[in-house]
Image (cartoon, rainbow, N blue to C red):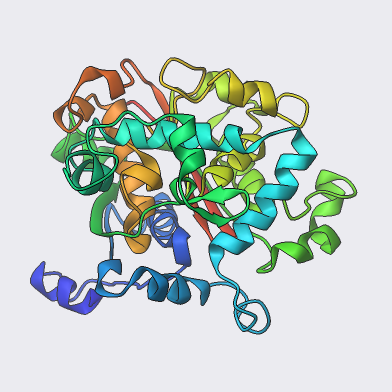
Length: 362
């Protein structure tokens, strides 16, 4: 397929690379483009991704996605991602003093914000659909809690959408951007990509992290690859870890499940074991909070066309930094005005590959 697009765009003779990395495909492609431009070899790199998940049933889609996990043991035993994330969520909940309702807050937030984004899947499939039980409805935590149980503690509305979609971005030198798109670009100020074990259950025994994070970290509830790639991006952008939540004005996080968004808060140094409960309950990632997250709807509301998601998240973040979000969002209530610094998070597997980017207004 990438060759067909290459031909139709008239790019014959130029190099191209196909990247497949699960949910972090888009983020990995952006990272590769960033390195290519940063090296000085290229001035302009096109990055595109797509997915057509509606070609199969939801159950078939879950089976296909599970092939990105451990296929030697877990997938053969019937494992799919809602089960893996539910296990992590339950342990994370118990270790950090959280409840199911705390996860439901993230699900409620993202879908309600998606209702203000006419490009979002939730807006089209549910909010404006008279046949949907959520037609024109502002969701509550109770709505999330009362939706069908998928795998405890995750309910249906705790899980992201399965989507069809595509996204395209140009990663260029700043000189190229100033010449060709002077009013429609942002600067990648930091970028990191890291990996972890395929099986979440292996992580507590993995010695590679112990020297850096101390004995017992990470265990299956922590996204060590998120922390590592986030720290690399922070270091590159000159952001102190302890100040990260204050420095970032808007963020796009990989909310494949409501629990994963909350886990990412902690991995990115926005809170810790002692403070994560208050951070969530004080709604610090809502629009009027310390670091607004997924105000376009995230994967739960905007959609999750796997190959395109990381690129889509970067573009959504960019729209707040260059003031183009009002052209897509239906009102100013989901627009982060005067945002200067953004964070984009892209995530694969159970945290097996994670990238983070710091974007800044020029």
